[in-house]
Image (cartoon, rainbow, N blue to C red):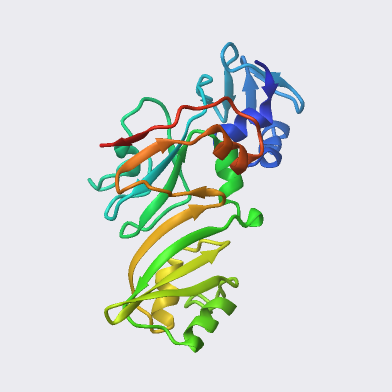
Length: 248
C-alpha cells in the first residue's frame, strides 16, 4: 500500500511527520533512485526509499510488546560492553526498539516496538505522556519533602523538574514506598530528586506509560499489546493482536 513519504520515514524512526517533511524538502530522500518531492507516496514492498543514502527496510508488520525489564539490564536494542539488553529478552525476529528508557538499576514496564511514529509520540516532551512509578526510599518522607517534590526541584544542572504527583503509600522498615507520576523523564530524574531531598532511592518500578500498564507481568516476562491498548496509545485502529505472556 502506498503511503506518504513523511509517514514512512516517521514510522522508521526518523522523527515526527513534520520533521520528516524537511528530509524530503531538503532533497535527502530518494525513491527508486530519483529525488523525492513533498507529497509523494511510496510502497516499501515494491519501492526502494533511501534517506541520506541509507535504505528504509522493507515493510514489516508493526509489533507492540510490553516487557517487564528487570534490574541490571540495559534499555537498549543493541549491546554495550557485554551487558544484557531488553532486546535480548524477546526471542522473536525483526526490528524492535525500547520506547523511552529505564535506568540500568531500575525495573518495570518497557514498551518495545518497531513503530517509529508511536515512539516519537510517546517520547517527545510536548506530548507530556504520564509515567507512573512505585518508588522505595530509604527514609520516611515528611510533608515538606513531599511538597517540594510535588512543586518541582532544581537539579544540579540548573533545570527545575515539572510538578509531579507524589503520594506516600506505606512504610517499609525505616523507609517508605511512594507513588510518583510525572510527564517528563530527565536522565535519572527520580534518583536525583530523591538525593537532593534527602530521600535516597532504593528501588524504582515503572508501572505505567501513558495508558499502558505493567499489569501482572513479572521480571523478564513479555506480552503482545491488545488492539485496544495500541488504539489507546496512538489513536489509530489496528488489527487484533493475539495476547500472550512469554518469559526467557
